[in-house]
Image 1 (tube, helix red, strand yellow):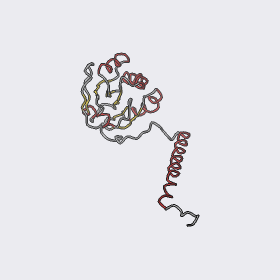
Image 2 (cartoon, one colour; image 1 turned 60 degrees about the vertical axis):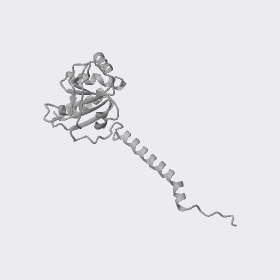
Image 3 (spheres, helix red, strand yellow; image 1 turned 90 degrees about the vertical axis):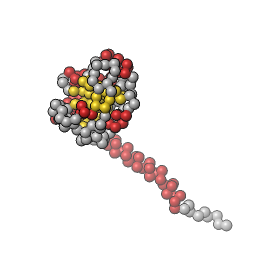
Image 4 (cartoon, helix red, strand yellow; image 1 turned 30 degrees about the horizontal axis):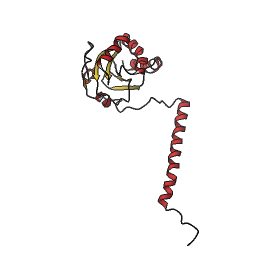
Amino acid sequence: MSDTQAPPPRSRRWMLYAPLGFAAAAGAGFFVMLRGLQTGGYNPRGVPSALIGQPAPDFSLPALDTTSLPALSAADLRAPLAAPVLVNFWASWCVPCIVEHPQLMRLHREGTRVLGINYKDRPTDAAAFLTRHGNPFSKLGRDEPGRVAIDWGVYGVPETYLVDRQGLIRWRFAGPITPEVLDQELRPLLRGYA
């Protein structure tokens, strides 16, 4: 018998290099992300939506029993619309929804039509939230099981969509609409699609 060992088979050698390849790819992706953050070309909230440029998915939601607001359906988003509308997914248990709410109230006072979809919430809790913080919604549907949110591609609440006058989804924002987002992104879009 010889003291020298035979080299490992080729397939085993590739298994040794695979983790190095994965680590190199992850490092390259992280470097690209950091460069994008530095130059402003990377938006961590910029999760693409397959619905951009498409009509709203078909849905029909019941009204929130504890309010006098009418129910909401896809028919409310069909062309022709008098002006662009916002569709806002929210919940009373959602802390970022509280941060966003003053901007929705401001839009409502300025005449922007805001339609609400209450996501996986108890009707009494949702009504108490609106009583405490104000009601920006002209229509409000209850998506207790979350099926409509899945059809829209919602990742979590709050999430807001802009629907233009032709009934096409033009913008999606995941997270709370802050004063900066309102002034820098949403207001120009509302003017552009008016």
